[in-house]
Image (cartoon, rainbow, N blue to C red; front, side, top):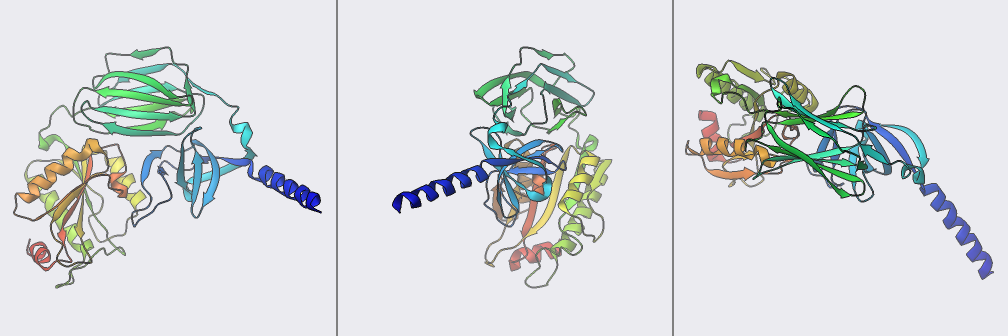
Length: 371
C-alpha cells in the first residue's frame, strides 16, 4: 500500500512539474509599458525600472493580480502590468533557453539636436537604463544578450557622447556605458528602429544657449476635471483649481521674462490621464518640465514646500526649484528622490514635481490662497 501511494505521489508530482514547465512568449503593446522591480505597491504604483518600446519580446513565467512576472535573463526578473502586454503563444520553458542573442556592430553619430548610439541586435529584447553622476554616464543593460560586437564606429558628428563601450557583466547581460561631455543630463530615450534589429539610444545635447528665453519649458498643472486632488482645511479650495492658477501665472511670468516657447498640459479644468499628459509632453519636446501640485497630510502640523525627482541626473533641476521657493520665505519640507510619480518616469527630458506647500496646514493654505 505504501509503495502504491508513493507511486501515485511521484506520478502527481511529475505531472505538476510538466504543467508548470511552460511559459508564455509575449510582447509589449504600447510605448508606455514600464518594467517594475517587484510586486510592492503604494498610491503611485510599483517602483519602476524603465519604460519599454512597443513590440519588445518578453518571457512570462508567472502571474500575480494585474501583473505578469517577466524573466529578463537567467538571474534577473521583473514585473509588468498585464494591460501593457500581449500574450502570443505558450512554449516549453526549456525552449526559451536555446536561443542565444548576440549583439552586432555599433554606430555612434549625431544630428542637429542629439547624439545616437545604434546597437545591432537580432530581435526586440528588453532593456533597462539609468544615470550615473561624477562622471555623467547613461547605462543601458541589455537582457538576454551576449556580445558579438567587434566594431564600435563613432563619428565626429556625435558631440555630446565622449566615449562608449560595453561590459559583459553576466553570460546573458550586456552593459552599455555611454559617457557624456557635460555634467548635466538633458534627457535620453530608447527605442527600436522599424526593422526591430537596431536598438537606438538618443542622447539630447545641452542646448546651445542656456539663456532661459531660448529654452522650451513645459508646465503641468496637476489633477483637473474629475481628479480634484487635495482640499484646504479652512477654505476648502481644491488642488486642481490652484495648480491651474499657479501654472497660468508661471506661464505669464515666463512670457514676461521673454520665454517664447512655453507648453502647458492643460489650460482649463479638464481630466487628463497620465499617458495623455506624457504624450502631450513628448510632442512638445521640452528642455525641461515642471509639474505643479499642492500637498496634504493626515497631520495638520506638517507643512512646507518640496520638490521631487526620479532620476539622479535630474536632481539639479529639483534642487534649483526648491532653492528658489525657499528664497520666498517658505518652510522646507525637503528634496525627494526616486519619486515614483508617472510624469517623473520619462527620461526624455529633465523633469521635477513641485508640491507648493500643504493645503492640510492652515498656515500653508493661507499663503497659497493669498498668493
